[in-house]
Length: 380
Ligand SMILES: CC(=O)SCCNC(=O)CCNC(=O)[C@H](O)C(C)(C)COP(=O)(O)OP(=O)(O)OC[C@H]1O[C@@H](n2cnc3c(N)ncnc32)[C@H](O)[C@@H]1OP(=O)(O)O
Ligand SMILES: O=C([O-])CC(=O)C(=O)O
Image 1 (cartoon, rainbow, N blue to C red):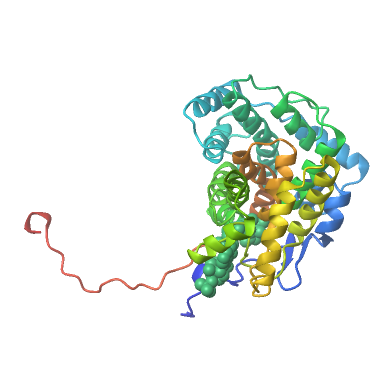
Image 2 (cartoon, protein in one colour; image 1 turned 180 degrees about the vertical axis):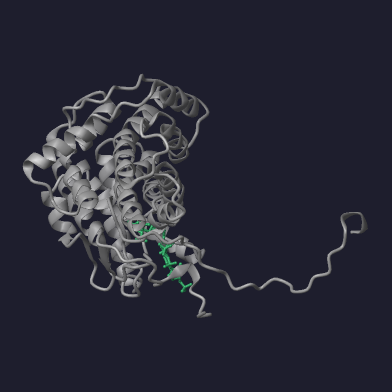
């Protein structure tokens, strides 16, 4: 057995997958062969889900039927809404509330404990449809408002914004949000997808895998960074500090810049490029360029300092928050929105892996003591 230690499993191949490919050297991302830029600009999130779950882009008729089936699953049981209310009253963090509510959803799934591939995909579809309802209800209750029932006639993106605000979104907001969902849907074996796969490899149910994925995504080294970036931008704004000075201070303290660096990308993340462009359009049309100015200043400074050349470049989380801010979404909902999209990738990867399942079980090099003499409790 090879004894080479790969900390963080960096670069270790553990599976074959047709789902997505990340070329970290040139900054390229594809879902099933399609470039992320083409999908972000030309496909809806529902089309991307179909692509990931069924292997090809849908025809118009296939998409209509798929989107209608997904929309028909948006309602959640009243007991889950009551739990969401209790979590909001307890001031729970949104990602933790989502983790709890997602786990609870399984109690009301008509597929129960059946574990064949078809039922797993039906369960996955239900989870994907219901997560936006849970999140919007949580946010509304926190704001002292009643949850808004889903509208099956709206798109996945449009319906979420509608449930969040109680008003149908305009076309630009819906398109922008839909694009963000597409950009976040899948990304190889990132930490949350791998977590879901490890759980799936034990043949545990889809709810367990997705709940685990949410937990992994919440961390600041992964999806949680989008919230951190926005909090930094607000902090800079509130202190009237020059953004470059803020970066200098963090670096002087040996800290990390949220939204920079990536395990795979050694150049700017292609998703960050698309989101930056979107932010530029939105800022120019609203006339408010503050977040764009701050983020651009930080990126330019770190580029001048040679950090970007060293491979610590902007990742997807660097620009997404500013885009969500322009849609009026609260900062601590950014990572839950990431989960609302990435659930599509988690489900696809677990289903793909389980087709030729092998329990995932690496090992650690033991560095503890050997031959320790056991002393009974009453003699210690
Ligand atoms: C959707 C996503 O998950 S994208 C990632 C979101 N996370 C973030 O934005 C958090 C900030 N970034 C990071 O912490 C890291 O870049 C990670 C966790 C994403 C990837 O890290 P790893 O591949 O494990 O790289 P590692 O932590 O070994 O860092 C390598 C070097 O780059 C430096 N570095 C990495 N990221 C940053 C950063 N954001 N700011 C400053 N320095 C950084 C490290 O300090 C380290 O330097 P050293 O070799 O001198 O000690
Ligand atoms: O791939 C990764 O390690 C993190 C990431 O960008 C993602 O999950 O989208």
